[in-house]
Amino acid sequence: MGKIYESISELVGGTPLLRLKRYEQKYGLRAEIYAKLEYFNPNQSSKDRIAVAMIEDAEKKGRLKPGDTIWELTSGNTGIGVAAVAASKGYSVRILLEDDANEERFRTIRAFGGEAVTFSEDPALSKALNNPDYSFVYAVKKFKEAVKEEKRDIFFLDQDNNDANPNIHETTTGPEIWEDTDGNVDFLVAGTGTGGTISGAGKYLKQRNKNIKIVSVQPGPLTRKNLENPDGEGIPGIHALDCIPEERIPHTMNMDIVDEFFNVEAKEAKQAAREVARTDGILVGYSSGAALYTARQLAQRSENEGKKIVVILPDTGLRYFSTDLFDV
Ligand code: PMP
Image 1 (cartoon, rainbow, N blue to C red):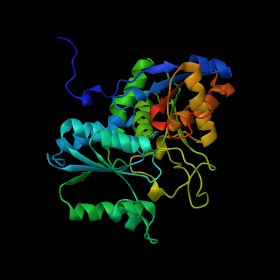
Image 2: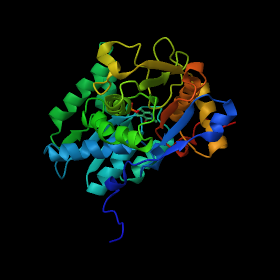
Image 3: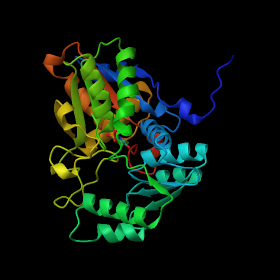
Image 4: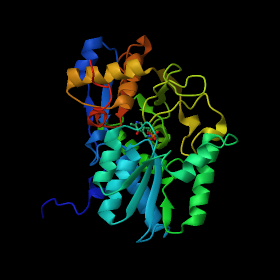
């Protein structure tokens, strides 16, 4: 029997680890860097894993039924993964994207037949977000409740609150890293948005070897977009979690698994993404650049001589050509 797949869901995961030899040489690094290339997933990001996992979990539990429309709020990659998996299973989708999400994200979701709108374009969501008494998290919660009340045939995947998100990284991403390195791994470096990747993969790896260090990558103070810094450009897909009130930390994030939080500014993230394209021929996105910059800083510490650092590179650089990521 040949090797024919029956659906794109079967193509998710099993992404390769690539040693970044020329990037190591460029900086004369003391430690080895192994990049987990999540753009090998069928829709070019780590979020393909959770798209399949959350949809199939809801199907198994009987909560998602034929004829339902799947809704999700996302910075982009989850929406793309969900739109593709939903198309392959015959569901309709409606994806709500942050207002500043780039054009590629809207176009890709629409190419899969999904509806893609900004937060501001949804009247109920924008009303909740503009309520001065509501925090962002509370506004989103109120919005979801209102929509569910009104429309019975929609299903929110809710990646920030859905255990299928960290669970799939615990059962796939973590074991893949352990097997591909034969257990020779000292650090896991990953950006945190929902925290699903780091919490799930980190949990598995720490269970195998409690000495593995888990490093969370987040936008630095100059890059974060917040009330004090409204012009902060942000890094799509990742957020600073060690400096916000507990109620704003996603349910899917396990803060206790993290040994170190590492701040990266946009300039540093972009520089790393540009450099690795030239040193090792891999084209990755902003948050990958941030994670790689972090891996490099760890690899330069004298105490990490000879250590092995696995860094998760979540998506493809092709998704950022409408931005200045590769403008040099
Ligand atoms: N990088 C990018 C580009 C992403 O889209 C995401 C997901 N928001 C992450 C990193 C962080 O992954 P996680 O949600 O699993 O923490």
